[in-house]
Image 1: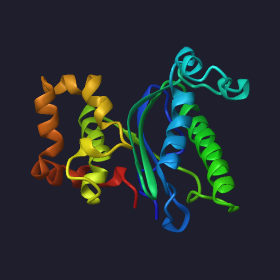
Image 2: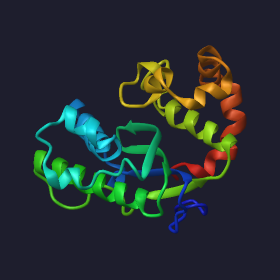
Image 3: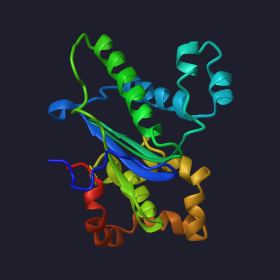
Image 4: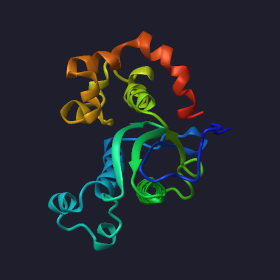
Length: 207
């Protein structure tokens, strides 16, 4: 069952943990191209439109019209073999709903054509949970980035290519809360602290 904290009536100017998982827990990313295609959809819908057009000058107008860069900000993300996590700030009430619909529909169509399948790829509608404080925002950022490490896919978060961890090292306002990059990295790798705080964010995760 979904967390009792899952919300449907989202607020504007608020942070949310949005996520979904493959139907029947199936893997939804089977090779590098799959991961890259999902990230492509995130990029064209969230990045500033001029940046998108510079990278993809032949971007179909129908996709350009769906750009949400003025409505939503990506805080962190992680794509796992059978699910994904997005930590987002939406500026308008419908921004996350529009993003999740566009990305899910686009990626499912790509996946079904590539693997010659039909039907749903994801387990129903996405889940979204309000992140109500700066404290939880920082904890959720760590949770998202540590998914590959906890699952035993890598030894350190920076080795995983399908998360925003490295991008955070390059340019994230959240790092500023720790005073230095070194302290931010220590926070991510402090397993005792992570386990102590896990119960506080457990309701913000996939069940």
